[in-house]
Image (cartoon, rainbow, N blue to C red; front, side):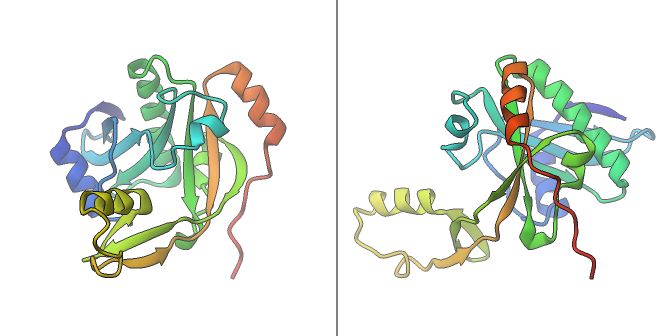
Length: 201
């Protein structure tokens, strides 16, 4: 398995074709993943994320705390291979983002995800993050902050409904963190909760 920096075209294709969200986040670092046969498998993305309160909550300053935003791979890998790809991407990211102190990411309960990849790569589970409200138009979701900025640009002449957006409540998510900083790791381990498991049907 090998890794390279990903182009915008590679990111676009992998996010729209390999990830359930079908959208491209605002990212800072993106990596191509190739399997042992040198076949391209997709991209893994990292960025600041939408939640501007997260760095403070994790005792970090902005820019030293990044979100693992997408594991947009083609689905041909088993959990072990996917976990290996994430671990390689995290290692590469740490070389590129020298001030990075920790990563965080979410597992979406709405997709019946529990964070198996994070558990396999020794992330620390901190509990449930309550779902936020997004707004949807033409099949695309936008965060409320983006909509509020749009309203301001339009001098608040229109309501969200008049602009054609529907309110969508996003499912709760499991919050995981991966500290590179030893001091942070000690703090997070004090707050660690047992890994969530899939419910048996």
